[in-house]
Length: 546
Image (cartoon, rainbow, N blue to C red; front, side, top):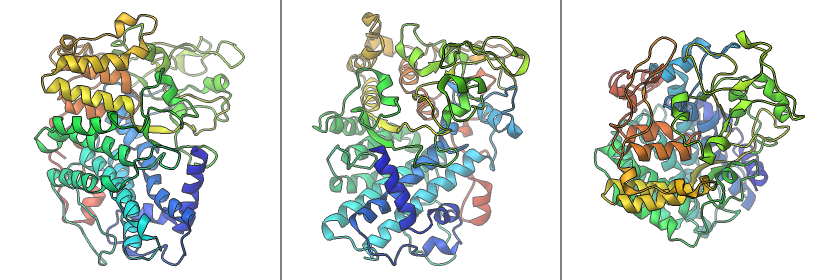
């Protein structure tokens, strides 16, 4: 199925003649291509229409997974992962250190790329909506309403990223804008309201099918999952919580007959051929045969040491880099299967069973044994830090993995409902759901899967404080309200680009220290609007603090 979807995406690029032109120019609001109909002269077949819609989804993969994008910003700005300096590099002008220390600037990649790639997706959605509404691409009336609604919900998902990262951004919902158009800046509350309205106004026109035709697309259930995400963070976005509305959106999926459910093993959600997982509600389909961008999905290259090429018979030698923060690893129960399944640790071997030996830094000639220790963001050895292994690394993989990336999965729906129940005074009901999610991870000791409402009302077990070769401090996590639930989110959704958002919602993203990171200002809950965008559009005002 992922092969078919990636073929469709490839065809979509041909149909629109040059998606790359749109991507590179979409945020230059003075650019001529912003309001030029590129695909107005072809006669659409059913396959063309699928490809046309597919082209607007491609931007999500680019936005999330390509170099210095949303994935890196969400994960390595938090307390779970980081990219320390390594014997073979990973300094790159200090960009990765700035992310860890919350010292990013107005022209750092994580802001520039997130802004430009997200507006690229919005531009593609606006283009398709315009072409269909104006009959520039012939679509029969039966399909027109559902296609337009699908594109509007997809567009809302891009605005959710902008709302989450930047807050106050322009809402551009038209493609046929005049030359030189410079949109006004909207408030975060206005962006939130726009997202909610776009989803709720269009969700009834979306397919309620859960099958190969709707996989990787916004059907009704993916739209409800997006709506739940937005409601879950409503208090952060607007100052007013929407816990009950989040529960309602979650229940729409839980009570549906769509067939979603938990896998018996969490690992099954992340295998190479995971497109048939009953847990995935909305995924970004990937297949290295058809998705050929260099950094399409290369987390294995960014985390494994060069010697691990022999472990998986990889086509290319990995680069080392990103790893887990030891303090986070220490929060896991040793019997939790997620600790073993999601992290590569211990002595490393070749595919033939030979022990691997270090080849870099001061560890040259010693066994390559990944250990749960790390001197700091500014230095490390080959062996320092557990490596990322949640997504299966296929034998013989290229520099691109072929695992589909689940943006929304059923466990997420359950945990969103549980959090809302906890926050509205129903701790025991929340605990029942959390226990349901945990049961697959403690098969060797089922009693440990059980949590109580009282447990979830406790603080975090994370031992916060500076822990590096320069400074050690003790802050603990017992003072974090509902901190135990934040721990549960970390254990279940590590490596899935959740952490920054979760930490902000629990009020401690800018309050606690970890490894080499100290609090660096509450304004860091938002990223700066790229300086280049402000220079192009005088209507934009920079976020406070930058």
